[in-house]
Length: 167
Image (cartoon, rainbow, N blue to C red; front, side, top):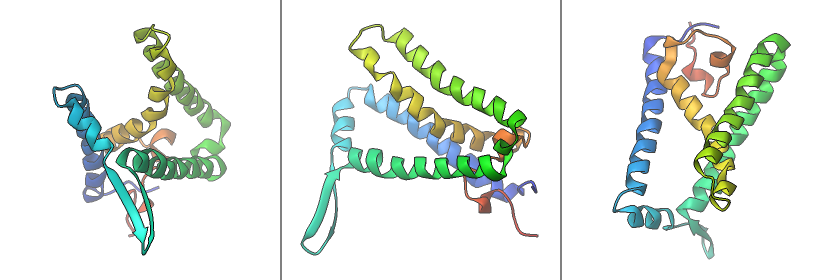
């Protein structure tokens, strides 16, 4: 696989930086005196319609049940492709990635449970386990060529047009 050229690395780094900036800004906004506005924003109605037929749900619904479904579908298709034709097709390379994936689920859940000992709050343990993949992709995008092109890096969770150029 050819290394990306420098002008093709910029979209990855920019997308990772935008993701991390948005996450930080959201945390600040949601925990500020303007938290009510933050929650009101997520409950704004967003409608799609054609003629007399309309489907209206909150912005929260469209992101959680719409965009996240598409995101995880793409991730699942990429993992399947890697299992059949890519870095995950060899057991020795796949073992480390599987161990990292299991740790990526267990570690955030354990940290959440350690910080939320209240039985009511501890029921949210699955939230940090499901959101880490988006941040992992963002960190990989930010690091770009700073990490070696290993099996973890070559798993293409972004379009192939961003990872190589025709000669």
